[in-house]
Image (cartoon, rainbow, N blue to C red; front, side, top):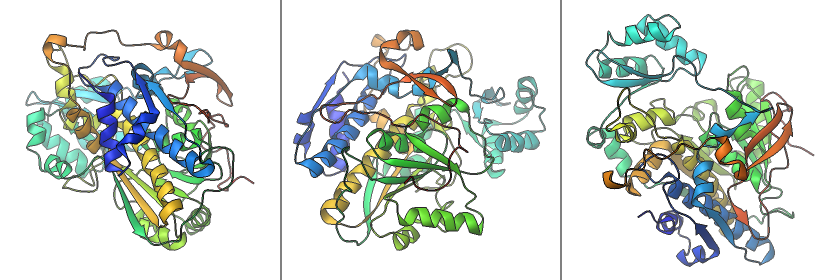
Length: 464
């Protein structure tokens, strides 16, 4: 059976934290909470509890007082798909582009096209010669062998993933590279004097985080820091599209500004922000931000003591380290979709959550907070590395229900099934119904002091 505390121990041991610290944690309930044989609720409870412990450790540094951390598997499992429950003025918000999804190729293999962003859709359309309809995409994909199309779309700087079996993925060189990596890394990358936490009445009061991320995993990292008192400033590329549901879901507690960091003026503004920041979180492929002058080494020069968080799809190692990807693509490539779809009639289906995104985002926040604790106690500048594919490998290691206990047929929760876990927030988007924070802290309640805002709302500057 799934064991939340064993999964939590995985995380604490990697961070070199005393396993006895989990005595502060109370986790109730057990999987399954979603229609899958994978332990999504267990993984969620582990990462949510880990962030709670990191918060408790920072609070103890401030005050000398310990506090308890509690959650339950259902609550944490739903947090791994909080985007699905976002409602604005009583209506659910759509997100997926009509031509995104899983298609059958000429050789009978299945593959997914990710076309949720216009530039990716345009590149794929041009390559296969499709019109902007599902019917046209279906016909054009059927003219290709699956792996040939995957390679061609990747080379065209767009996004595609073949639905591989677990055995096929295990034989892939990228899988072998990921197997050599831990779930996450917290690495000291520079020397700096110990830096006490800023004054304040919350665990992360006075902490400033630059959030140069998009979609889900990276923004969830920043949202989690904001949940415990950090000032988080999300920086987006001007004119870059993003689905309202995701902007809202990941935007609680944040300021949001646009900045062209490809321009000289944009670079200068971002450098000024970094000089007075504590955390710099970025969610692009390895080398992308570095090419614009914001590699971890450059950030350390600008701001000794900075904590850098790096999130990506396929990790920083292996032949696919620069491959574009999102949660659903990694699910296809890594064998998760194949497992979820066994015995299913029709096209393959994804897991009932973009849980790789959410688990990775919480891990990034945990790593950032643990690095801040280390900065306060021993000094240094730090790098936290996480990726969706490392999370996928860990999720599979947690185990699964067997066919005799097949959980894929249990009901898939809708908003009406989780109303007890939700709250309402008034925002410039309208009245938002959404999940409340998944962690309960005994002394420092989790809360967001700012509603989500459109990405162009604020100036790229820290609040007074």
